[in-house]
Length: 145
Image 1 (tube, rainbow, N blue to C red):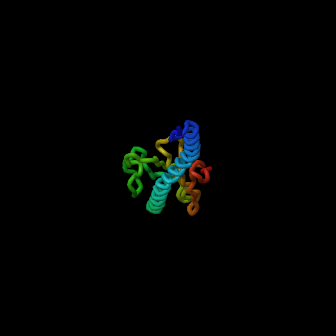
Image 2 (image 1 turned 90 degrees about the horizontal axis):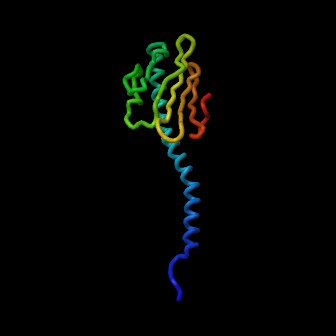
Image 3 (image 1 turned 135 degrees about the vertical axis):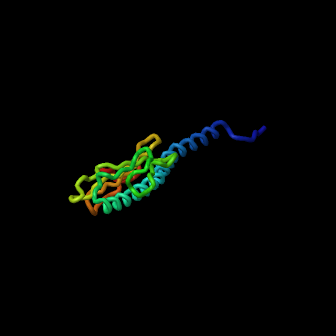
């Protein structure tokens, strides 16, 4: 008498194949999701950068620019991205040049607020005309010096 159905060996082979595919696909999927989320950070960093440029042209001083981490209003003419509920990144200003006569330098950093890894997106303005966007190595970008 011939029975219909799958043998235990056939079921085990299918389970092993699915496990291997999941082990390969899941990390790649997670990395792709984080890269797409970093686009939000890059957009907000660009907005902050433009606001800092406007602020410098109005005040001729970078050292007084603020972007409070608690989400309260800062000195920039944009809505503070730190005020967003359920935000993916927190934003901070650093390395603000005190001598506006010399140059306009600053760093805007977006740091991932949750997740297993720490991801950052950074804009580093190195002089009046030059700057560069950096991403964490695990986001596929050059790392900030």
